[in-house]
Length: 299
Image (cartoon, rainbow, N blue to C red; front, side, top):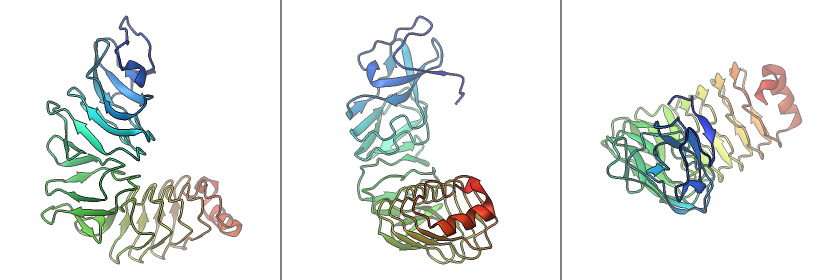
C-alpha cells in the first residue's frame, strides 16, 4: 500500500465533503479525490460496527494498521465490499471483539465463523480478541501472519486440522508442521509452559501478550528468540535462556514489568533493540551485565 496519503480526520479535501452519517466515528486516510479513503482510526461508541462502503463521495477501500487497536467496546465489525487491504494489527487489543464479518461481495477477504481470511482461505488474517476459547485452523490454511492471535485472552487452545500441510498443534499450542518453530501460544493458556525439545525458533510475537504466563522453560534446541516474542507478558517473572541461543530479537522481552531475573548465556551474540526495555523489575546486576555485553540499545 503506497504511503503517499495524509492522515485527515473529519475534514474536506479537494472539494470532497466527508459528512456521511458515520464519518464522525472514523479517522481517515485520504488518497486524493476519486482515489478512495481508508480507515485510520475508530473514535465511535463501539458495539456492532459496520464500516460504511463510502464516506462522502469516496469509496472505503482499506483499513489501516492498528485502526481499531485497543477498542474494548467493539463487539463485532463488518468489512464492506470495496476493502482491498487490511493492515497488520487492525483489530489488535479489541478484547471484546467476538466476530469479524465480511460482505460476501468482497473479492479480497471473507470470514469463516467470525474469523478473517483472505478470499481463497489460504491466509488467516485475524482472530477476534473476544473469540471462542478453542479454535481449529482449517486444512487449507498455508500462512498465518505474525500476531494473528495476539491479545486473544479468551483463547485457551489452538488446534489444527490433521490434514493441514503447513501447521500442527502440540497440546493446544501452534507450531510449524516440522515442529521447529513455535508460532503462537494461546493468550489464555496455562501459566507455566515447557517448550518441547526439538524446537529451534520462538516466532515473532509467539507469546505476546500472554497475561497469565509466569514461567516458560526453553529447551537447549532453541537458537533464536523472535522479535516481540514475549512482549508485554506482564506476569512473567524469570526466564532461563539456554546455551545454544544466539539471537534475541527486538522487543523480545519488552514491557515484562515483573521480570526480575533473566539468564543470558555466552552463546548469545546479538540482542535486538529494546529487547529488555521497560523491564522495570529487572535486578540491577543483571541489567548491568546485559548493558556491558550488548550496550544500552538492549534497553
